Length: 153
Image 1 (cartoon, rainbow, N blue to C red):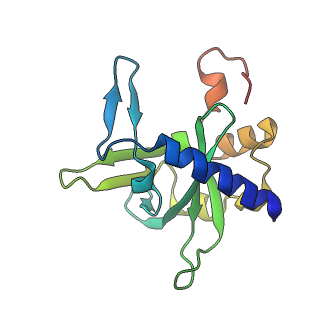
Image 2 (cartoon, rainbow, N blue to C red):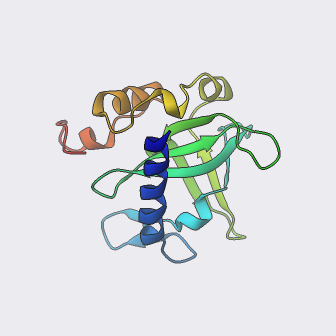
């Protein structure tokens, strides 16, 4: 349990440092986009067919500052989150609509999301366990995408 709170504390500190302007904006020619983390936390996550899956509860940032996973809470009771599921950040599609409303869509259906392992069932700092979660959601671990070789996490 202490490990979970340590991860949450690190994410919150790093998340505050990652907060940018109120709109997503391209970073030069790199093709990267900056998201205001304060606008992502609490956003509803939907499946591609529009089914509400839950809300972004937190973000997991690795030692290099890369947002690796979003912790999505399944619907819970009143202000308490439901079961927490770590989904690879690169399995999310994030965009802003005309009303500056941020839309978050998980590239997985409802059944896949609800059958995913709970956040506490995986050690996200362990590269093999994190990679198995990436594969579960049908994405490649980000550290293998460019060169095909694992880089430090």
